[in-house]
Length: 144
Length: 238
Image (cartoon, rainbow over all chains, first blue to last red; front, side, top):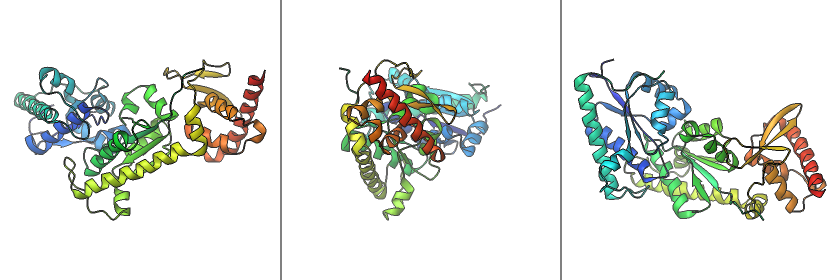
C-alpha cells in the first residue's frame, strides 16, 4: 500500500496517571493542529477500547501513528487489536531518553520542558512521516 | 493482625482526545485525584482494561468505580462495564453542562471559560459521588477495618491476577457463580456482630458493590449469600 496522498490517523495513549501520557496527547495535538493539519486525523483511544465502528474503520483504512506513554503500549496494541495497521510507533520515554534536558512534570499542567518535549516529538514524527511519504512505503505491516 | 488496605474509589475518565469534553473529563478526574479527595481516589486508564492485565480489571471489580464521559458514546462507562464491572456512578459531561446551563465547551487543548467552569462543576459532582460511596454506612465501617485478604480458605480460590482479592465459587440456582471478595465481606459483617439471623438486605447490597448481580436473580443471590454466610459463621465459631 502506498502512503502517497493518503491521510493518516494519530492515536495517543490517553494515559491519565503520568506526565508522559500528557506529553503523548500534546504531541498528537501539535501534529494535528499545527504541523500536519491537512494529513492527520486524531482518533480517541477510548473509542477503540469500545470497538466503535467509525473509529475502527478509520484505523483499518488509514495507516496509524501511535504515541504511547508507558511500556503497556496501549495505543499501539489497541490499533492492532482492532485490525488497524501501525505505520509508525512512538514511545515518549524513547524521546525523553534522547532529550534528557526535557523532563516532563505535571499532568493537568505540563511544565515548559514537557511541552517542549511534546513539540520535539511531534516534529520528529512529522519528519518520519515525510520520509515514508517520500519513499511511498509503509514501515509497519498489517496486523494478522 | 493483618495489615489494613484502604478502600478507594476508582475514577475512569474517557479522556477523549477528539473533543473538548474529553479534556474536561480528564481534568476533572485529576482535580479530584490531586486536590479534593487525594488518597481516597485512584484513576484507572481506560485502555488498560483491554491492553493491560487481569490485575487492572480485577482492581476495578473490587473497588467501586465512577466513570466520567465526555459525550453520550459513554466509552468509559460502557468499557468499564464490558471489561470489569458496572460502575457505581457515572457522569456524562455533555449532560452535566446542559443541566447546569453552561455555555458551549470548546478548546480540547486549551479550554475556554465554559470548559473551565465545566471542570469545576464536574469535579464537584465527582467529589460528592466519592463521599457518597465511601460514606455509605456499611462501607464506611468496612473502610475502617478491612483487612488484607487472608490466605485462601478452603471454600474460596485466589484470583489468578495475584491481586490477593479472593474469589469464591457459590452455587446459585444450580449454577456455579464466582463472587469477588466474599470472605472479606463476611469477615467484616462478622466483626460487626451481625449474625445470619440479623441480616437484611445489607449483605446483598455490599456484595453488589463488588459483583454484578442480575436484577432478576437478586432473590436467588440473596438466599445463596445468606446460606454461605451461615456456613462461614459456623466455621469461624468452631
